[in-house]
Length: 112
Length: 115
Image 1 (cartoon, rainbow over the protein chains, first blue to last red):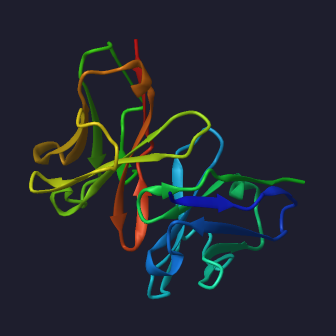
Image 2 (cartoon, chains in turn green, yellow):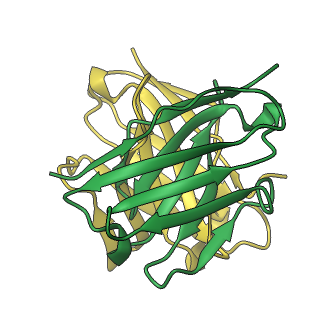
């Protein structure tokens, strides 16, 4: 059974940083493309970033230069380093393996 | 104008069929894209339903009932999710998605009410 488990989010002040992790089981992070998708309260999903098996990465314009996606193959874990957080980054963040394996999501609230 | 436009809401009766549309913005030819469909219920992540590019190039998600199917309307430049034999548990938000320039682009979603 595939499981993707995100780390706890939390309340972060504007300008702050947070690193999310996504531990995978039953699914090899390094062999698949892995994506972060976020969903603001009451809104639809928004793609954030992808890392391919090759290691190539891509980012949404809204987070480019502030967020960094990475993985640790030895830990079978995906990461999202979020810096210079803004109010509009408030959302539930989902880790997605391929198209169809989604974590349960973790809420990140950016507010003073 | 958004790349993918979905009607905000749709209502249908149990046992009936519902056709959910996903219209692509001018300049995006529906014929060239895989259209991905997701279902989301409150408090849960989106669940992958299916991928549709053509009748000969489509994929059903694991465990997804065959009463969920995809199609396209080239004249309307739209992808379509057809749900037949509606059940109360089909009440949910439905999102279409395309993969464009290494990014996932989601539609705004359709809230399907079964009543």
